[in-house]
Image (cartoon, rainbow, N blue to C red):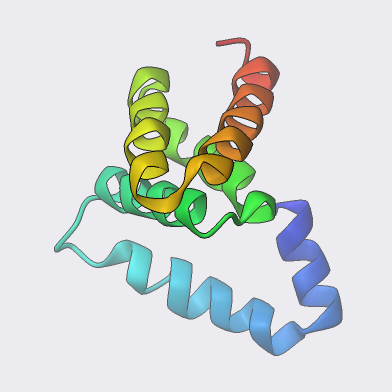
Length: 104
């Protein structure tokens, strides 16, 4: 379990339960989109919304789901032109942390 999920379960057990059951147990498991596709969408949304705290974990999840480093770079570039330069500048910093931690 990730640290943020552990904290969520400690502070708001119901939110932790709903996240596990509804978000990751239902939404992420729906067959209409692959987990890879869901990761692409999620990373783009988190970049656009400047959600740094969630972005790091979801970039890692995206890599685990088969999204490549170059594809993540392209998501950041593409989203920057729709959501603004600051979100792109922020996202590259977060992506670098993830890439460095994974040695890629």
